[in-house]
Image 1 (cartoon, rainbow, N blue to C red):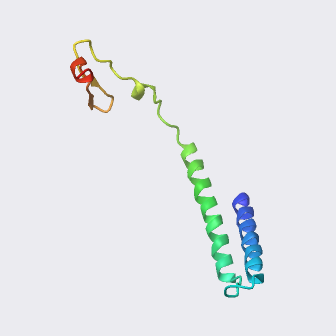
Image 2 (image 1 turned 30 degrees about the horizontal axis):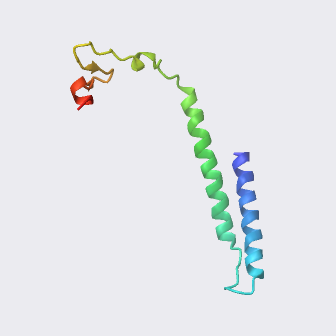
Amino acid sequence: MALCAVGGVIGVLVGAIITYIVDLLPIGPPATLSPVWVTIGFTVSCTIGLVFGIYPALEGLHPRPNPSPAIRVRQPAASGEPAVLPTGKIRFKPSAAAVHH
């Protein structure tokens, strides 16, 4: 939370500096810094930091199953028998005739 708040403050300061520079330019409309948009920007920054900080922390609380059985795939026989994936789907090995037109 502290890191995203610091990022929000830095973003607001950069926005204020850019607004000041644009306001000094002789062309274009006058630039102003609205407290509403400062509040919205800071709130969005903190919300993003909370969401992307809490979600991985909650994911870390629950142990994941061992992925090694899901990675194993039965290899097809030389006769062109299809490989059966752990999901139950079938992966076909291309025949030599299909590869070499």
